[in-house]
Length: 306
Image (tube, rainbow, N blue to C red; front, side, top):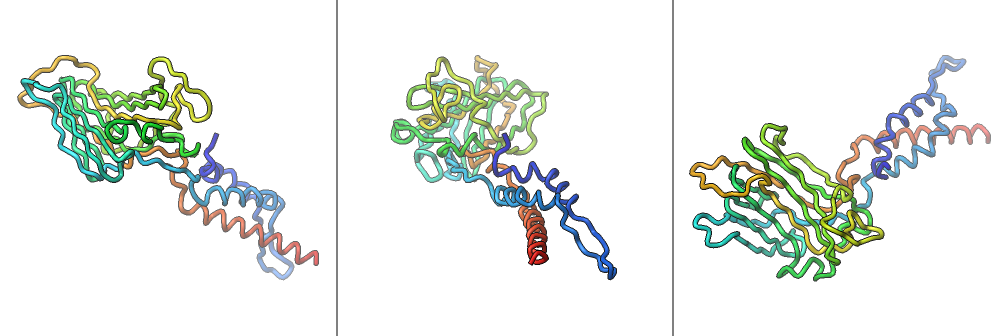
């Protein structure tokens, strides 16, 4: 199904063909060149008007901002030998953060730096590095004060939008995982794995991750509208982003670590695919012109009948 706000764009080639076939040039008895509005264009006019309305802007999505990454935090550096603690934690309250608080966790061999619109994860390749960003409200009592947050924006949102970049990955594997829990305790996850030697992003790429691309964690029980993978996306209490090495379990002290960098670019938000893909700026103007030609032909017919 084509999102409403993309209908005009997707249908443009067919609409343009119909319109073009409806414009015919002819010469009058006096030798003047005039434009004839044929029946094709008259039939296409109602469709054009509808497409003009649909393409005049994106669908009325209700984006839910999870993090703009403009509130600086870090660097949060994972523990170093002799590892008196298993993980370094940092909690921060600020603007542009869902629930008002962001929690950062870094295990050995990982560092997290947030600010300027992005979260940067630096990982020691060849070590079991693991870093997490968690949004679960103040003092971890759950988003929406425990009642959950509606990520669907009253059914106008259908996925997550963010930027992702990976550089310096020369050995091993790095994985990115997004985990959600709802107010009923149901969980869902989506994981993307990047391996050295395989195509890895160059720069930061725009990513849209649909709600339907998640898999359940264990047995999930949510049903009804707004449910994906057995999780109620209208009542999400916990969101967690993890960057980790899924292949290595033993830490090895590396004097000159080979570092891989993962950049998670904001704004990180729940939104609609239609809203995340802009309609070409010339499209409304094009359709306005076609609609105007059709209205002019209708006016000429009415004038002739009178």
